[in-house]
Each structure stands twice: as C-alpha cells, then as structure tokens.
Image 1 (cartoon, rainbow over the protein chains, first blue to last red):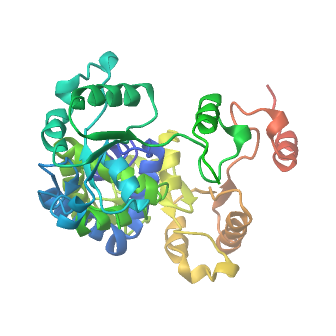
Image 2 (cartoon, rainbow over the protein chains, first blue to last red):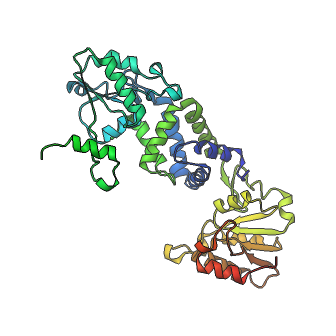
Image 3 (cartoon, one colour):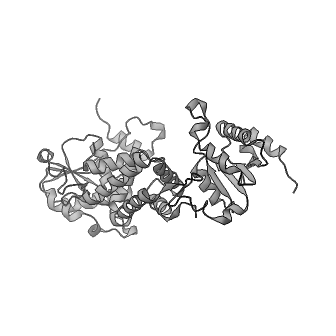
Length: 198
Length: 198
C-alpha cells in the first residue's frame, strides 16, 4: 500500500472507478487535488455534497436535473414543436442539446434491449414512452446505430404502430468533416441511397 | 449549456480540471456518478469530505499523510538504514514505495530548479533537506532524468559538499522489459558504460 493513510487510499480507489480514470490516473488526480486543496479539492467536495442532495431523475422523461419534472419537461415552449426524441441515455440527450436541435422534448429509455445481457422491455422506461407519445406529433428514435439500438427502435416502432404518430429516425450518412476513405461500407451505401438534391 | 441545472454543470467543470479528464470525460464521469448515486457518488463525496479535513503535508519530509510527521518519518525502522531518498514530488515517493525499495526515508522537494519558470532554490524544500541530511549516511538523489532534474541534483550535490555524506543517484540503464531497438542513444551508451559482471 502506498503511504498516505486510509483516507487518501480510499479516495484513490473511488476515483479509479470513474470512466476514463484507472488506478494510476486516480493517484495523479488525488495528488492534484491535495496540492490544490483550497482551489479545487474543497470546491469539488462541496459541489459533490450539493449534487448528492439536489440531483434527481425526471419522473416524466428520465433526464437528470435538480427539479422533477425537469427544466425541459417543465418548459411549455418545448412542447409546441410536437417533437419527442427518444434516446438511450442522458448522455445522448446532452449531446443533442449541445448540438442545438431546438425546442424539442426527450424521452430517456435508460438503455437498449439486449437479450444477451438480460435486458428486456420491462427493464427500460418504455411504458412511460407509450403513455406520453400520444401527446406529440412526431417521435424521433435517436438510438445509437448499433444492433441493440436498432433492435430497440424496431420494437418501439411496432409498439407505436396503429396510431397516427409519425415515427422517424436520425439520418445515416457521411459525418460532417468526415473522409469517405475512412468510412465503413454500410455508412457509405446508406449515404448514397439517401442522397439529396444540391 | 446542457440541461441539468447549475449543480451538475459546476460538478462537470470542477472534475474537468483533474489531470486526465477533459470536458467530455468529465460529463461522462458525472453521469456515471449520478447513475451510481448510492454506490459511488455518496461514498466519493464522504471520502472527499474526510480527506479535506484529514490530509496534511508532513512538516519533516513534505509527504502527504493524515499525520505530521508522516507515517514514514514517524517509523523508527525507516531511519535505521541511514538512507534518505530525495524526490521531486509526492508521486515519485509513492512510485518508489510501490517498487518496495525498503526501509528508507524520503525528502520531497516539491519541484525542480527551473530558471525559465522562475523556480529558484527558495521555492523548493531545500533548506529542510540541508538541515536533516546530516542525520543520514547516504542521500540518494532520485530526481527525474530531465535537464531540470539533473540541474537540481547538481545543485544539491554542491550544497552537500564538504560533509561526510555519501551522495548517490539512481542508475541509468535499460528499463526492465525494454527493447534496445526502442531506446535512445543516451540511455544505451550509459547502460554500456555502467555494465556489470553477470
């Protein structure tokens, strides 16, 4: 055990469980914190304390926020477009918000269907989606372009079938700034099939 | 601004200041924390609170610990070898402890001499070293093999000159597991000059 006492050792072990940090980088992070006690360690400790108390999951959409319904669900302008975007995870919601997709609402599934991992429909926030989808004119299935993501999208499309809802998915194609030479064949052939007039 | 409220945003910004984490990985880390509130976020918050209170810098050697003098300085067996290892940083002390270098004591300089960055002898924990070096039979200068590290080692050697102290440095050579083909010429020529009998 490295010296430093159990308090430091425990901090290292907890930080090492964060994604992107391993035991070595957690040690560096803890030393960084200790050296910047007043500027970083104390504020981080206080911010974590506040977040533990304040952060909750939105009862409507599954987003994380300090209020429930979350600020997006509580904003009436967000409902006017009639667009509900279904995402796997809160990280995807944040990514779409950063992209500035406009006045839309979201629904966070909390995962994807994955029989191999034992994740079935009951493990996802699907009933909530079925219940509220009728309030919107269009449901955009923005799952990841993985097998599980697309399986989940098909399942939701089936469940929403027979209603007047418009169900759409994100376009596949060449990423902005991407080079054709580095793209996989599936993306390239999808991009060609979905070509548009200039 | 991504949704989530100021508490979440502030937590992301503070975590992004840790080495090894940027804005993107800090967001992932915060979501990871929020999803594992009871298993990870609450314990991490408590561990940080405890560390803020408990962690201090050892008044003798500059190590970080929850007691001062630190557990290494307070351990009488550590003094019996008569070996004092001088390191730049607490991270180097931890690395040597992990390597199991034995019953030695340390002295943490808290940096290296670097005129370009405005770091002079007064900015380092040098007087403490001069004061306690006489209590040991040998001082090992374990600075990094950089220009600044070696300059600092020369400076300390000069300052300790005229005493009966044995002043040594770490051996240079081929890293264990290293391949000659990938080593720089300086290391290789040092390794050849310092060759030993098998």
